[in-house]
Length: 402
Image 1 (cartoon, rainbow, N blue to C red):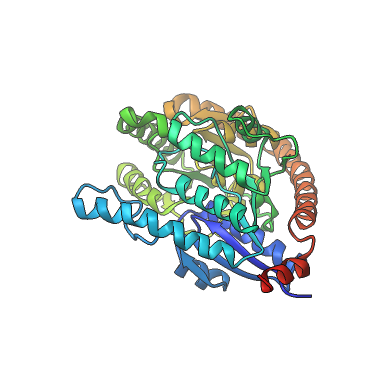
Image 2 (image 1 turned 90 degrees about the vertical axis):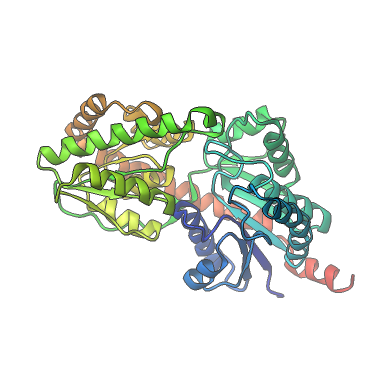
């Protein structure tokens, strides 16, 4: 049998640990179910992806300043030219593959600030190229949400329509795509891909609390009040951390993206206690180890929550989007959500103490929910094989004679 040529696509290797964790889960599936597959990536951080996962990788954008604000004429021209070059580069890359997988990530949402000509445009190029050249593009376990911006919504809708396979990480995502006019009749919902990563062993109680922070400025529709939202979030989390330290509790600060480091530094400067330290996690596996060693976790970033729940640690969500609420409900902790836009340190402490009071019960709940989640993901990967790898030999034969 001729080896299938498989590409993986996304903002991978760019500093977001959740995105990279989804990639790691898909690579684990490919290596177990399709060890003969030849895999490479078109991604945001190709050097990181190659060094960490051992696969060839190409830079997603020709213009290296793609995600920096362009104010000078040269930068604006570079971005404009980059859009044209990327259309050719993406099409050429897609054509070399039998299958392209977009592993997880919130690629069909704008719950964080997003410009339509950035990643939404790149995703549209991918899916359109797949349809043009007969390459099966699969959006696997992705997140979606209602989008206010009409240009972004249009690009996202057409990307989803042009994909050969779609599955979502929660029912809210599927419902959002249906509301945008995408036929989701055959689309499945499965747990987040990161739940397929191995869980770390349980640790003995240490009294430690992990607090996952985020460089949070609201969503795409909150740009006018982004700084106000950020100040309120940072002040509330800082007050919460200070209160724990004053009670003698060791606090471990976690991040999920490179940009979160500034928030960690601000909290460390404000609290100034030896009980408050920062973790240097560089992968979801590292984050899971940190959360497994804690008695309790309070976290903002979606994949910080995934790590804590996968580790079986009682968790409270500082929720910034419906996806966080849906995840917590799926894992049996729906009562322990607090709005990230309006962090009230006093109320957060009350919820935290209520969570700790049910710790033993919630750990049993998480053990059972993780067992079910693993079984559901096994079924997703089986279905993915059926959908994406039906006849590799035939595909190659057609292309080699064309």
